[in-house]
Image (cartoon, rainbow, N blue to C red; front, side, top):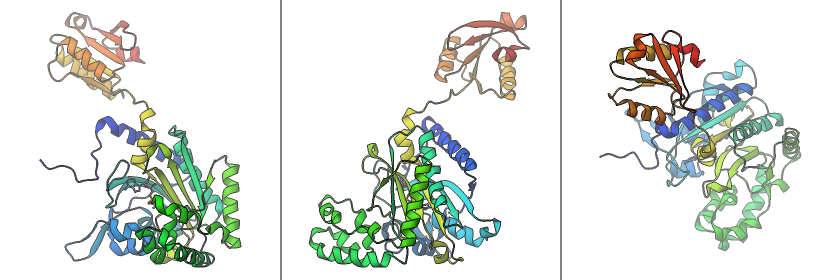
Length: 411
Ligand code: HAM
């Protein structure tokens, strides 16, 4: 027996309705915010992610599913959506469709990580990317779109963390100070942090090792080094969030795992999820479009982990009944049942009947199992008089109706 690959999931009918519910809400919310769907390939040239996400990120260093295709080109299963959407934005000249360009996507992503609860090798993201404006109102809009979805899902315990990590004007000065401080504390850091101190010092701030925390707590804070433009931008993002009643917590250690961010970064956390508690995150990336070969274009975006979001809130949701109507055929009434089944479906009802020659008792049991709201009962004597019975499965009440008019009875 061949099993599914480690870190992947089969989405089965008893859970997939949660996915569909979330996807429907996402599409409705995106329409309200004027974001439009884009679908890009699941694999891209490897160089796109190397250049886009940063060579010294965990994703590019060790988590990409990279392979040579039969033509000898290096390809990679997308580990996230932003780089692909930026590539598509440039390649399809989307700036010509009117700025800002507001896009969203839903689909599988692939990262070769150590699987655990909430962390998979194939997982799914909903993401939005907004191109062409550096206005803080769009940083706030992306945040409030995510916030609105979490709220509508009934998530009460989602915390929004917010930070600004500066721009190419102010960050180098901070990085210098950070490197100095890291050098002084080298002995108190784990091996990974020591390496990161050289290759990607910002990432040290994100280290989860307990022993590193005292040293990390003493490191300089990026928010103390922001240039006037970045400080002003950050202040405006915060004031718009306040205007829209979005609660947030500032965290000057929040840096995110990808190198393309400038200014605003944020994450949504659900403590009860344990180690993998980030249900979404994003930020501004004003340099990425140019980095990937386009005109300088400010941009901001966000992505939500679908699996983690469902783990966090999905248990409180109510499933809709599988069927509105179950047709119970007594005795030799199967042909009549088939006719009524088609009629019911043609009129938009979710309808089902027995296909296993079950006894009448077993047919009612099956109707209950499917949570049917009504049973249409066809008996030979009634049918001979053009009559049927309709049973309300909630209160058990039965009424007799004409064979030609039972649909009206349901309505
Ligand atoms: P990210 O923080 O790497 O950001 O991923 C976003 C979300 O995807 C995470 O918060 C988490 O919920 C989910 N996620 C990530 N890795 C896994 C995994 N292995 N298993 C399950 N869920 C996972 C990005 O990907 C950026 N592209 C977001 C963005 C869009 N920034 C700007 N625009």
